[in-house]
Amino acid sequence: MPRRRTKRGDERTPLTGDYDVIVCGASFAGLAVARELAGAGRVLLLDRYEIGERQTSACAAPTEWLTALGLEPSIRQTFDTLVVHTPHSTARFPLPWTFSTFDYPELCALLDDQNDADFETAKIERRGRAGDAVEVHTDRGAVAAPLVVDALGWRRILSREGYQPPDAPLSRGLEVHPPGASGELEIWIDRSLVPAGYGWSFPARDEVRVGVGSFDPHHHVKDPTVDLAGRLRREAVRYQGNWIPHKLRRAVDDEVFFAGDSAGHCLPLTAEGIRTALYFGIALGRELREVLEGRATRAEALRRYGAFSDDHERKFRWMLRAQRAVPRVPPRLLALATRGMASRAFTHWAFGHYLRIAPPEFAGATRLPTAPVEEPLAA
Image 1 (cartoon, one colour):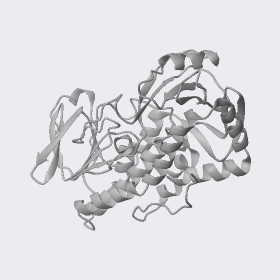
Image 2 (spheres, one colour):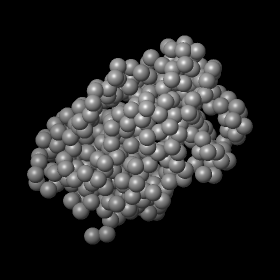
Image 3 (cartoon, helix red, strand yellow):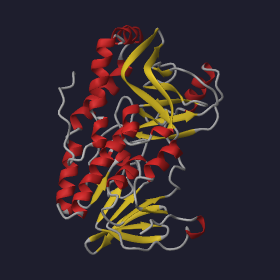
Image 4 (cartoon, helix red, strand yellow):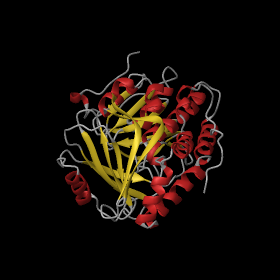
């Protein structure tokens, strides 16, 4: 049966249909879940906006992740070196793997082509119960399914827990997209720019994505973003921003699955959340497929996926400790440290471990998700 896609003229008609899975949120995590469910049952994707309509990040990821998912056409620029600036130094880190910026609408369209889910635009408001199923209430009415995923972002709308900034473990990020070009992937760790956080410049062929992120959610980042753009002689135009989770949260409750930012699947310190959203979304999709194909129950899927996410807690905790430690390092000592860590041997060791937190080969695996075995992280 051809999948149903919302047409603008149909947006106010009530939601209808019988579904096996409802995935709320149609960005990285939600699309990854739907990808794994292709051909397994009736799936509904819900989002407030059209797929690919609302970019909220710098849109960059390890190139291997993009190629593993067949998303190469969305790539705009690829880098094998990271340039890190401090007030007293500039260090070049040769990467053991490349990092690519990409076009968000094109990537979402490519990833969406890999599922057979229905898609509807609707504002998700809350959850309820409909017998043994979970009911999703929207501004177009309610629809229910036995399996429901919240991939809606940090607001975690289908959770019963309150979670509001600035009194929550969230970082604050803002970015501008001036036209231009550059061959450097750059990071600034500079307290004159942001007391706890960093600035960045991520070129993407015909634009340069310049932004600032603050680990302290009370610290506003508009002025620092404009400041960094000015330092780089770039226009502060085409703003976008969002709250960024920096602490892992429970990936399940008694009946709902959470993936991506709604589960805190965003790495502290680096604020990298795209490959982790894809990684955990794929893991969740595989668990749900087991249920749809009669090899597991919903309770078993909740337990297994929750355990899979929890198995990564130590890695996230160590990165959160580093996030808290870096702003306390005196600037001159930080300059010495970044120069010392820029050796090829150290960079390849450190970034190799970092990639293993959510390894790209996981995208092509067919087995059920288990946490990858790796050497202990250094303190």
